Image (tube, rainbow, N blue to C red; front, side):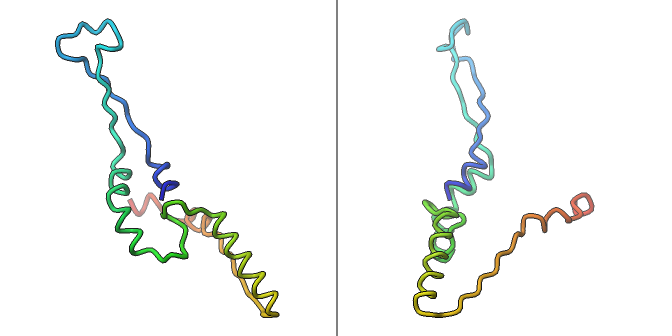
Length: 107
């Protein structure tokens, strides 16, 4: 989940002059960080997502990554090879599938 959070974890910094200060020094200002709304939503629903998503899925889970999925797949293939089993794997690249969406028409 942390990797998903990093995409949204950008804040806008606003500085406000403290009451009774002249504003001539940096300490005269108070900083406020405004986080993005998607980040706030993800942060609040993350515990509920962990209960719903299958354990084998790495996306949107804390301390899980693509590398772990590759290791799990490699282990599965090696185990099948040792047992003389046939293993089929299909890889789909869905990133280009969303390039053909008629975005302007949908909006």
